[in-house]
Length: 226
Image 1 (tube, one colour):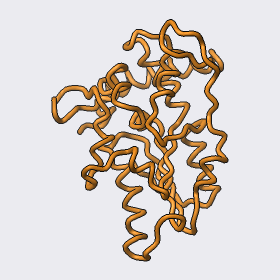
Image 2: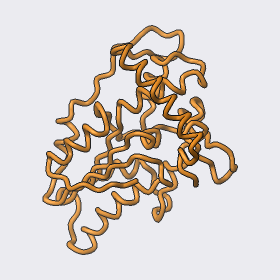
Image 3: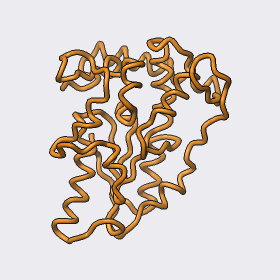
Image 4: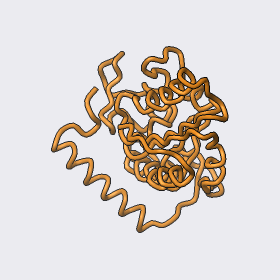
């Protein structure tokens, strides 16, 4: 699978769109969460403060996996391999070992459900091809297709006591804004929709880089996971 930004022209276009979206975000300030189009505005969604998910980091052995690109879904593979290695070599699991997977930048949409991928044309946006159709993915092809883990889903991975999964709220805000037009909704509606359709078990942090830093301050070693 090609990288989401594999060609110079595509990369320039992406960066231009990202700059516009980021500037709009910065100038617009905080936005209230809304429900579906036509519904009354809901209360703003509170981004996790940090202490709740950080308190789930346990044990002597802790590593944070910095996942920046889809990269064929390998970020989850690295995190699970870390846990399995401690189980095989040291017989440790559960409260003894923690893997923190931070999905930021282009990897953030991997924490969204299939319906959101279809509605916002995320496969087209990230240049992710569905191997079953050879067309831009209209589903989250990574969610149920973890390499070396047949049958395991992201939701099941996140239900594991030793796995903490964090999604970047900054990436969610910018990317939902950039794809809102494709879904025929406003940026505010798109952001609320993305927040409501995060995969079960994923938590939002203010930004991915913040989450990586906080995990390291909480005793995690660092692993770049593509």
